[in-house]
Amino acid sequence: MIGAGGVGGVVAKKMAQNHAVFSEFMIASRTLSKCEQIKKEIEQFIPTKSVVTTAKVDADSVPELVALIREYQPDMVINVALPYQDLTIMDACLETGVHYLDTANYEPKDVAKFEYSWQWAYRERFEKAGLMALLGCGFDPGATQAFTAYHAKHHFDEIHYLDIVDCNNGSHGKAFATNFNPEINIREITANGRYWENGGWVETKPLEISQDIYYPKVATRKSYVLYHEELESLVVNFPTIKRARFWMTFGDAYIKHLSVLEGIGMTSIEPIKIKGVEISPLEFLKAVLPEPSSLAANYTGQTCIGVQAKGVKDGKEKVHFVYNVCDHAETYKEVQAQGISYTTGVPAMIGAMLMLQGTWKRAGVWNVEQLDPDPFIAAMNQWGLPVDELAGIELVKD
Image (cartoon, rainbow, N blue to C red):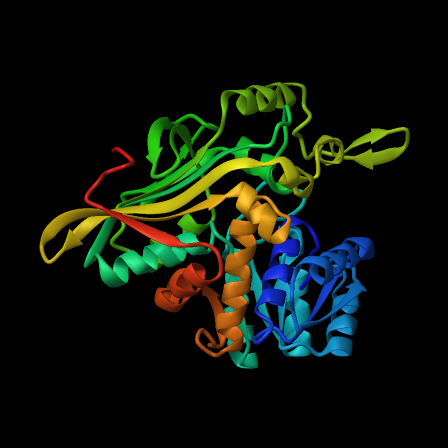
């Protein structure tokens, strides 16, 4: 596993719980002390038979990655590093002949843009090598795509309208903080929104479209349309979709802080020089803001992430919702992490497990919705992310 942040900690601890599958694994990162801390917490909190080792590696360097992979000789690499590093890690996996999984699609460091084209371009090389690359196997993307495939397999002949909804109804007690890597989080939120409608993309201003959405077992919250990466693959793999949108909740205080920071240029990715040192304002802001993993101990409340589908079954129109509710305090008790890290880390472990067991093993580059959703959802129920369903109630309005 490459990456030792909040998500990496969850993946490692869930692998340690699942030691029958993950009998040996290595945690590698640019900062060795973070890897060692995760290993220490596993030894302290997780009863396991897994053999856990650590290593230092620069994920921007293909030669360093190749050298480490050849030394350790793993079956696969789980990439929970930064999205900027997806391609170097994929290159290293191809060179060393190991399988690959990540939780977020590639984006260039110097351009606030993410799309699958760069990684989809690896399809033929992975196929020829007999290797599998599984893209975006977190929650959103990841579980949301499995939910969509589950809708298509069990509830619909055709899906016409798809709404992915993500609510964090938790509180960490900080004036302003992001729940995952601040640099990635803020780039995503300050970008223009986008949704799919009638065969094309409709672009919106950041947080331009909103509505109140009821999140079962949690709350009714104001939610905003963002562009999220799984939309790109879902509309390709489910061509009957007429409209696909992604919604996320933000509190008024969060938006106010973000608006001020954006207004004074602190969210810019354009480098500036300070006393001869070149750094982007967003990189500086990331260093000032709380580390997402540090929020876990005092986090309360729940997340609710799900997929509403509308379409046709046996000639009749229907609406169906598949979702998970996750409690921040409970995840901290289990793996010393807040719910955002947990909901991303558990699906990554599950995807890796299904690949290693051969359930999802196939050569090429794949998105989660292209694979059988049933074993994935069964594993979510087993490993801490219970899946629920709600029939006949339209939570997201037209």
